[in-house]
Length: 124
Image (cartoon, rainbow, N blue to C red; front, top):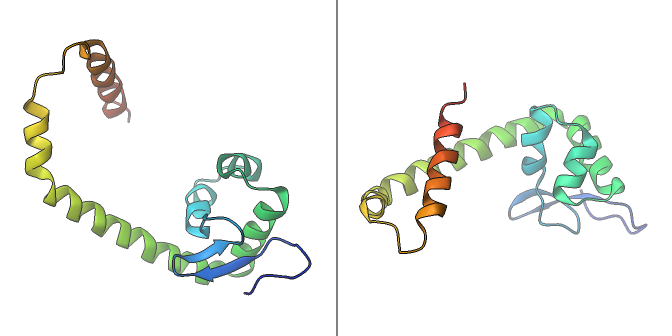
């Protein structure tokens, strides 16, 4: 789809994939929230989109559901491969950093982060 000349929000294909015209936001970003059934108003606010932009994105997704979902699945697989690659590549560095004592004055911040991490990991 090419940009419209009448000022309407459009969906364009860039090197990053299907993108909301005039933004760096891809439909795959939006799909994360669509698939989790977030309301359009929430998605609009989250990405700071105009009403026109969110409606164009949702209409495009609905009209091209099979294609967009197939591309979305490919994006998710690629993201998982990258996550695994960097996790493996940085495993030694992360382990080394984890053993270092906190810098002076950061004990309270570190304790707060550890508590938040423990709470997050204990969720079902």
